[in-house]
Amino acid sequence: TEYTALKLKVKEWSPEAAKAIEGKIPQDASVYFVPATLRPETMYGQTCCFVGPAIKYGIFKVSDKEYFVCTKRAAWNMCFQGKFFDLDNFPKDQDQLETIAELPGSAFVGTLVNAPLSMYKEGVRILPMDTVLATKGTGVVTCVPSDSPDDYATIRELAKKAEYYKIQKEWAELEIIPLIETPNYGNLIAKTLVEKMKINSPKDDKQLAEAKDIAYKEGFYTGTMLVGDFAGEKVQDAKEKVRQQILNSGDGFPFADPSGEVISRSA
Ligand code: ZZB
Image 1 (tube, rainbow, N blue to C red):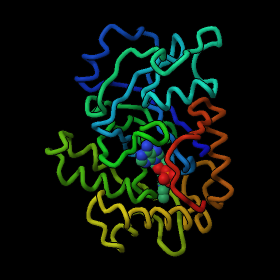
Image 2: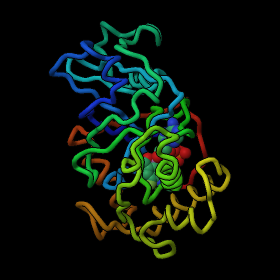
Image 3: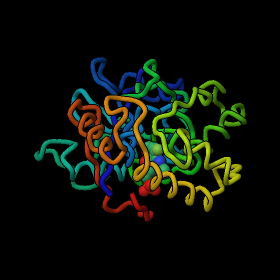
């Protein structure tokens, strides 16, 4: 699968992560969470970024100035795609990857990151999502609740049980911005589908898979952009243009996940 990996720069660490990395990252270096997405045209609507609370993440050194937070298997994949190291230092196995810390996703919850293209310029929070797969993409998932039913179901759950999830309620309650108009499901397709299909929880995986399939198809084949530089254009045309902007600006890079879990999809 060919993803776009987006670079979400850390602005302020959660207390637990701050403690774990203290003194280990040079002052002038940046750390990025790197979610992998198939929907670059929806990046305007990012309202948070998810990690699996029980998944183990590394903070990997990419260069003197850049560090990435992702799973080790994703960092290892990136090595083969030229994202890490010069050839002299090429690691021989996964354990040779230079890691400054390994932490469960739960340690990062509350971290404030800058999400490129998002309308929320002041940044968005790292939040927990129990259904993140460690074996897919980078293990980091950016949240677009307007167009992803999984994301909509998860933030609704987080807002409902903020205390249980140890988050501030308002982190999960950012206004959901319409990005794409579809003739059959309006401009908040994820919300429409979750309500219509009576999806009650992020654990309703069968229905969510179906909703995702519909959202992909409708968004891609019938959608029109409402926001961004390509507002008014068909999603089919805008998708690649937004992707190129992200790649050209350096806010993201192509990321292939040959060994990742493949879930059939039509768009
Ligand atoms: C932002 C986004 C916006 C996404 C959207 C989807 C949608 P797929 O479709 O199953 O092949 N994702 C990526 N990595 C993981 C992971 N490790 N665990 C769980 N979910 C993950 O997977 C691709 C999509 O699944 C990615 O694209 C990512 O969410 C999520 F409006 O990024 B997406 C209708 C879907 N809409």
